[in-house]
Length: 335
Ligand SMILES: NC(=O)c1ccc[n+]([C@@H]2O[C@H](COP(=O)([O-])OP(=O)(O)OC[C@H]3O[C@@H](n4cnc5c(N)ncnc54)[C@H](OP(=O)(O)O)[C@@H]3O)[C@@H](O)[C@H]2O)c1
Image (cartoon, rainbow, N blue to C red; front, top):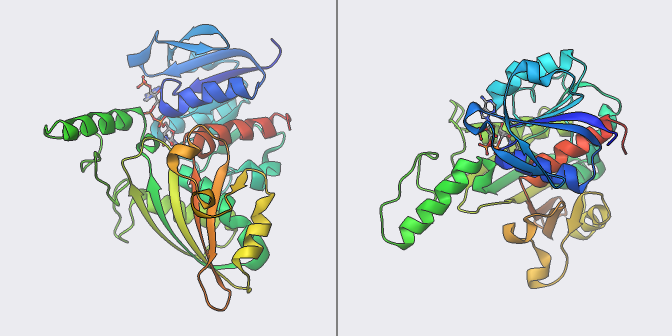
């Protein structure tokens, strides 16, 4: 089949599985697919377009000739392989945080700045999952009315950590219901029937890693390094999809109605409107869907400078794999 020689590094992981699915669904043109994981998974069979493909142990020699590479195997693998692959002339869409702070590497949400990577080869960074859905919802507000302040609390599912964390939630939930002790290996605190505001190490500023990523990446997208961004990022016992309670203060006066009008027809966003349950999405509702669901848009400032909203998206799709494939579609001139 005509197309690009394509590789997925981290193909057996939570994001990798979704990358395989989305490449098929969107008919991304692949002439040859090479799937890589760690040595642990060498030989594991993965399905693609009705055929079985064995996962290969990662090595530079096996990557010769690839034209499009998706890396989702952690920052250390990205740092080692992305520059080599870029040197080779490949498009490298990186899901880790390794290059997101590098101003020479585009950080891309295609609905917002996909034009920056048309025809591009080399490394392109996929943003943090929580940042993608947040920025898709608030960037139009910033563009039209100007943001003075952004406050967000996230409710992040365990699939954001990966496959092992999903197993931990399942095992701890069973143990809890059966009255057995909860064993933990992935998280510092029990996640079964619990939650905690702790995603990565805490820094001296009191922020943990995830909160700092959201602050820095959001400021980069909104092109305002001094924007006041306050984040509390929380891990919750949900398998898939992240939710966010977002409050913005705008420079120019606006209203919930005007913001809803601005968001209603934007690509990538599904505005939830209506009474009661029709005005918001849940993680279960968003699972497997491509859109970022924005709901409960409401006024929170008496003089029209404050808007609140509830934003939900599937972290493995728009928060990771879908955004990565959309980047490749732009770079390879497919849209
Ligand atoms: N999950 C999300 O929502 C999300 C969103 C945005 C970005 N990301 C980023 O995407 C990456 C993967 O996340 P994930 O959730 O898919 O994690 P995961 O489920 O733990 O999967 C990790 C994948 O990387 C492979 N891997 C690990 N070490 C490797 C090595 N030394 N060489 C080759 N392959 C190696 C694993 O192979 P084995 O199966 O052999 O161990 C597996 O395929 C991370 O950088 C993460 O920060 C994740």
